Length: 371
Image (cartoon, rainbow, N blue to C red):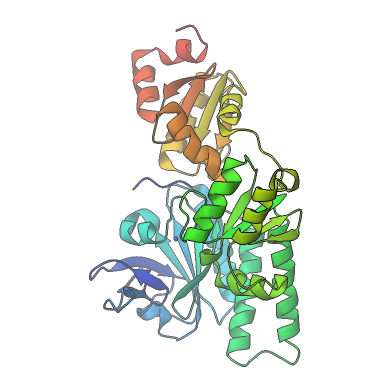
């Protein structure tokens, strides 16, 4: 399974038969594994699938587990491993685990791990949060927030501990609501809605050319429950424009019928026009996972090395930062994988094609537009 670089037992559900997962446990309270690689067997499958987290790393019965999906070829993973080790020393109540993502493809596929580093957060065997990419400050904040919540659940929070926790949640919700001019909180993603109401509202917004970002409330139970009370709106989907709640599907349908939807919601550039603009942004454009400075998958890393050795100027676009472009470009160019290389707006191909051109001596003329 090719991974890019930026979803272990009592950590969640694993769709595998008896499989021993190579894991590095950073929790200082588990000296039996210490700094060496250990083996963590998942428990037998239950009614909801096998439970991640019955192995030695979780015998301390701590409820918060942070799992780092990493790859040895990604330097940013090594950096984040150091951050994890520091956090493990600071948070003795939290268990930190490292999983080499490509060594456990079933687990990586189950949790949608398409890039490394990726961090999953589990409480009481439930996946409650995730972080994609090498963002040390954000990882620290998430660990602190979830660790504080765990302490509160265990009854160790001091007087008034609930109020600061609620303030932190509200601040986070405000940040999410204002993350884009038009924000949709839904079940699933626009590409793969996971309920009929979410599918209908996405279809309406797309039909009207509304530029919107989305948040999958299934990915974060804290947001899912907190936003209901924060906005006094008990159901999903929920649509926000410039930080203000518009409503759910019924309200959006009413606005569409009255013609008001087009005046309320910001319009976006048509996807096809946007893709044409992007592939012509520079004479040589590379669409990849990551960027020149930090490739986030093995294929992207290889093509960057080849491109850098040509001496030709080129620009990159990180498809992990824009799901619409990531999915849309596949159909637009009829090329299903990444990386994708374009010269003067024309698709050259992916890594295999670039390797062939290099071996035949044609790559440099192609990049210069001579062939």
